[in-house]
Structure formats: C-alpha cells, structure tokens
View (cartoon, rainbow, N blue to C red):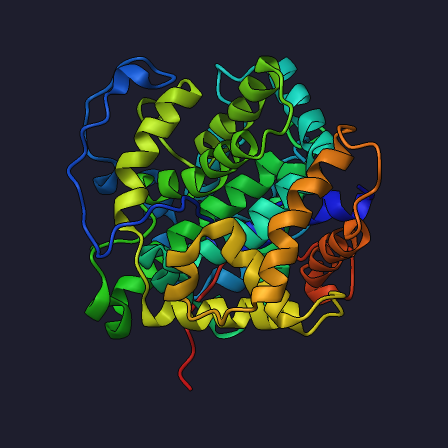
Length: 407
C-alpha cells in the first residue's frame, strides 16, 4: 500500500493499549501465574507473577515531578527529543536523566539484522497488519477490563480524538523502516511512554472512580504490558496464519523479535518475554484469553472509536464497519459491544475479504468484484487516525498531570 497506510500501521491499536483473540471467558478471572521463565529470552527467572512487577526506577523518579508541579517543564524538555541518536534532553531532574542514560538503548540481545527484516516485513504486509491492528486490536482493547478502565479514567480518556492523535506516535514510530536505527525514533518514543506509564501509575490510584472498580492496586504492570503485546503481536500472528498470508520462517522470527525488543524497551523483564511464537501463544492463553469481558467504560470507548471512524468518508456504511469488526473479532465480542447486524454487509465481507487477500497475494488472476471497496475502506480507516484525519504529522507524547477531568 501507499505511505499513508504505513503511517497508519498499528496506530489505532496503540490508541487503547491493544488486544486480540476471539475465544473469550464469560467473566473476569485472574489465573495464577504459571508460565515458565525457561520459555523466555532470558531462559530463566524468579517466576514472580508479572502482575506484581512494575517499573520501579522511573516510577520513583516521576513522583516528585508530579507532586511538585514539574510536569510542564519536563514535557517542554522532552518535546524536541525525538530521534534515537539525539542527546538526552537537558533540564530534566537528575533521577530521570540517570534512568534514561541506562534505558535509552537496545537490549544487549537485540539483533539488528532481524529488526531490519521485521521492518521490511511490516512494509510488505502493511495492508493486513493495519486492518488487524486497527479494526481488530484497537476495538478489541475495549474488552480488556484493566486496559479499558485505565484509558477511560486517565487524562486522555475524556478526549479520545486527541488521544488517538497523540498515541498514534507510538505506532507510527514502531512501524517505520528505521524504527530501531540511529535516525529512527522508536527507542525515544518507548522511553517517553515509560514516563507516561509511570505518571499514570501514580495518578490513577488517587482517583476513587478508578479504585472502585479496579482489580489491581497499581495499573500498567509488566503483566498488563504482556497482555498488550499478546493483543497485538500474538493476535496478529495467529490471524495471519489463519488467513494463510505467505510468511517465511525468517519473517515470522523477525516479526516476533521486533515485538520482543519493543516490550523490553517498555520495561518488561527478560524473564517474561517469550522466546518463540509457541512460547508466546502459550503465555497468551494464560494471561489474555481468560480476562476478556465487557465493561461500561469499554463500551463507551468502543462507540467513541467506531464513531470517529464513522465521521470520515469510509466509502462504506456504519453497518459494514460493524460487520468487519465482527468478522475480525468474532460474534461474542461484537455482541458485548452491542454492534447491530447488517447481514448484507456480512455476506460481502465473508466472500470478498478472502478474495481480496488472494488477489493481493497473486493467487487470483482476476480482480475481485469488491476489490476497490476493501481498498478504499483500508485507506480511509488509515486516514481517520492520522491526527483525526487532518494531518500526517505525529503529535508529541506528553506526560499527564491529572486524571480524567470531571464533567
């Protein structure tokens, strides 16, 4: 696809924290951690449940920033800090500078050749990746209770259009061919995101509305970030296999490696990062599948996101959008979100999308009847989340200083 779709890659998924799988449990459950660290990139570990592991160093450093009114100054300092090879910003508190000096680099086990291959894989498969990350993972995140509630009650939850524009930066930077290169931006973006997470971990536990429904004491643990990974990377991998998208073993390994590095940069300990796709799917079955369920906050967020898409000229009806969401996510989740049926659109999608894939992969010699319908739909969805459909410029990631405003 065009550069537009590459810019759109995983942006909507990044908006909410991301998700995926179609078989779901009927109610919240919190299974004990039993995944073995022998299946991790570290090959060993303590076995401590990642739900009780956060990001201690940056968490401690951000507390005085929030309590002493330093957030505007820190945001001003990090705003021009963009590329991976830029020097660390001046004017930051000493504890944050010390943290960034250690964190602002690839993990020692990162393989640059695999990362470059993953970037090329993203470019070659961007059509499918965008649809899965966007209409799949982004909407599905609204039935991850902790994700949905944390987003809803945080500062950005009150203005999802603005949040979409800001969090697009994460997805855009990760999708670029140079994401992990010196002239790329993802390493810096990941560290800014860790600072944002630390702020949210300090702020949300002070909010009665969040505490009243929370199943955790502090949000965004290592376990929650693993759920995020599985709702994106593992889900997308399973759908690409289900849709029979051609992938070499080297491509699959590189795609996994890019996510291994990404979640490491977000503060996940090596002992929790799956070593192979088999390990990843086993972990996902434990930490993601059992926890999915609807919430009041999640339903509201889903309607806001689908509404944002509906405000753009998609070239299709809202019924088609609902049905494509249902096609990607399954009936259970679509019913949880209250998506009305459109059986005509459902029939077009069931027949047309597999044919669209076959034609794009060179396996169907004649262009399908609805090829341009799907092509226009993909491009329009991408545009809808490029800063609200008005610009291709990314919006700076900024540290919040309050929770969701009242009213």
